[in-house]
Image (cartoon, rainbow, N blue to C red; front, side, top):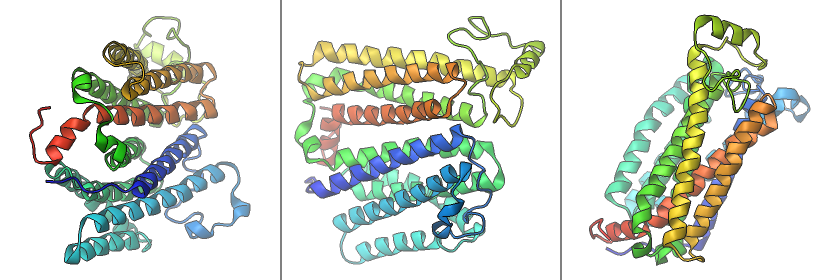
Length: 384
C-alpha cells in the first residue's frame, strides 16, 4: 500500500484551522475568567437577533466577550467543514465522494434551522460519528478523511454543547465543552502533522527515539488529565477554593472538616461563584496543584532523556525543550492566578498555555511514533 501524496496547501490550511481553534480556546477561557458565560442568555440567537446580525452597538461589557466567542466558534466550524470536505474529496471519487460531501453539507445546513430538537439530535448523532471516524482511521491509517469526518462531528458537538450550557444552565456541560475543545485541538494537530511531507520523510529516526515513545506519550496523557482537572475546577468555580500559594490556608494540606469549610466560604474572594465551595472543591483544587508538580516532573524527565539520547540539533530534542519551557510558564501562571485573585487575563493565559502545551505534546508524540505509523499505513506491522 502506498501513502497518499502530500499537499503543502492542505497542511498549511490545517495549521490555520489549528491556530483558529487555539484562539477560540483562548476566547473561551476569557469568557469564563470574566464571568461572561451567561452575558447572552439565549442561544442560538443573541438577544433575539440572528448571530451574524447582532448590532455592534450592543457589544458591551460581558456581551462583547460572549458574542465574539460565538462568532469565532462559527468561523472555526466553517473552516473545519471546509477541511473535512477537502480531505474527503481528495481521498475519494465517484459516488462515495458526492455522498460524503452531501452528508457534510446537510449536517452544516441543519445548523441553520434554529430549532432546539434539531441541535440536540445533531449532538446525539455527532458523538458516535466521532468514534466511527476514529475507528475507521485506526483500521486505515492512510485515510485522513476519517479524521476529517471526526473533526467535523466534534466541532458540531462542541458548538451544541456550548449552546446547551447556556440554555440548560448546567455547569457539567461546561466541563465537557472545555475538554472537547482541547481534544478537538489535538485532533486537528494530528491531521496537520500527518499531512506534512516533512513528517512523512521521517522527522525522527526510529532507532534514535525508540526509547522515548512511551515517556512522551505518558507525559502528554498527564497533561490532558491536568487540563481535565482544570476544566472541572473552573466550571465548579473552585479556582480560588484555596486562595494562598504555595501553602493552603497556611498549611501543607488544608483542613476539610465542616467547620473549616464554613470558614473558607466566609473568607472567599471569588465574586462570580454561584455556590459555596465544598470539601470536594478544596480537594479538587489541591489535586490540580499536585498534578501540576507531576506534569513538571514528567516533562522534565522526558526532556532529560531526550538530551541524553539525541544529538544537539535533533528536532525532537528541540521540541522537548520548548515543551518544558511551556510547562514552566504554565506552572508560574497557575501560581500568579492565585496570587492575583484569579485576574481574568492571567487565568485566561493559564488556559491558553495549557492548550499549547497539549498541542506540543501531540506533535512530539507523533514525531516519535512516525515510523510505526508509516509502517502500518504501508501494510507492515507495528514493530520498528
